[in-house]
Image 1 (cartoon, rainbow, N blue to C red):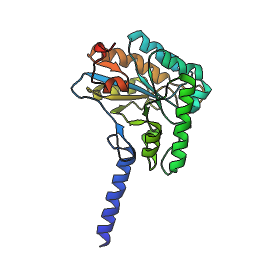
Image 2 (cartoon, rainbow, N blue to C red):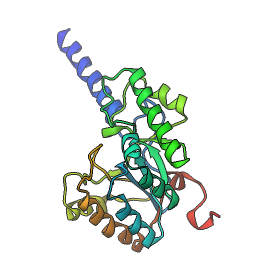
Image 3 (cartoon, helix red, strand yellow):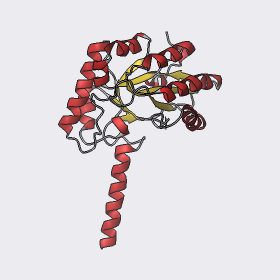
Image 4 (cartoon, one colour):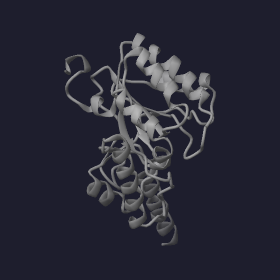
Amino acid sequence: MFPALAAAGCAGSGFLAWAVRGRSASVFGRSVWRGDRTRRAVALTFDDGPSEATPEILDILARHGVHATFFQCGGNVDRLPEIARSVRAAGHEIGNHSYSHPLLCFRSPQFIERDLRRAQETIAGHTGAAPAWFRAPFGARWFGLAKAQQHLGLTGVMWTVIGYDWSRSAEAVVGHIAPRVSPGGILCLHDGRELRHKPDIRATVDAVRRLVPMLLDQGYEVDTVSGLLSPQPISSRP
């Protein structure tokens, strides 16, 4: 009897871990983690911004004529509103990445909705655009998130490939992502480091400088999350 209970407990723990961090899980709210596998396109996404170095990434993307989705923290938007606005002015998409970048696990539903709502209102207030997409800090979802997303009109976004660019060199980031790119993939990098002032994101900038032309040379369209999930190819959009 006891081994059976222990096995059931382990199975339950495994399911909860998947529900919290599994990229394909939608237990705690509607979520996507990739697009159409038959279309040679990827979405490039950045978390934790804006930061003082975000304009360097904007310059690289502009040089290659591609757009991305920036999941911004409300606290950083309040600190750097002009940079947040420049992201939207350059034609990029802005997503909600919470206000204070908390780990949502074990937080109350009230806390979760309050933090997401504050981010939503902050981003909309400074940029004029209310996000449609949400990425949980650390990719960790929790009880109460589904209702918060529903109330705020948000859909969760995980990733197909994450670069670990907060702890790796540019070469290691590119080496990790490059062989894992596939049609419909959502790539996750970071143009900030949580709520830190003047974070060192040189590895990210260098990785983007290498990755974007590499993807284009391989025949990939590089787009926003909304663009990737749209049935209409980039070249056909007005």
